[in-house]
Length: 291
Image (cartoon, rainbow, N blue to C red; front, side):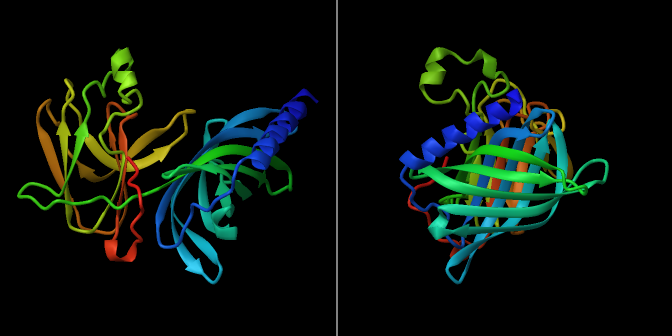
């Protein structure tokens, strides 16, 4: 009874937020976005943490915007599930989003995942949605899901062609030891920043140079994220590897093929960047770049 009381209070608070926040559209066609959400999974016997992370593109279909999945992480109680059969739609000019898919657990059991999100507030760069959904097992037992999620647009990154690179990304000083950051660093806005850019949209053929301004060596690899241990970690896919980048040195890599790339530091896995490679002529230019 106590568990359902907590869930009920959570829903009431979300309803209050919905009633007082202005609802303006944020998701538009022919763009790329990321969605990151945290919340609770409520079953008959327990309330556990749940996380969701999406990277998707949008395309116009009549009066609605269809969402095409590029990657998705979904985990409850630290157990990650594999997603397939994804479909999503943005309705009412982006004020509402619907998501459905099949989720497969590590034991091979398949679940039906359905969710509905409502826009509750936005800035010039990000939007906040409340998302409620269900995770239904083969016996039709459902776990209720509640998230607060942020959707951010991948901005087109201006490129400057030089002999070395088109885009420079700095590995900031102190990235290897964030606990050593001072009050002055936090006031400067770097308390949660490890790279000068953590998301980029670039055209094919762009060179990115990573400059190590930290006092420790770093090594970047491409891979996929997971939540198997209640926190986000990464697994290398072997496609891109920088080797050791010494302090004061740099490493340049060229992205020729279109798609999403996730680079992370093998030793310091809180350092990661998402890169969206696409022909810029097919993507609408945003008004404000997201850092």
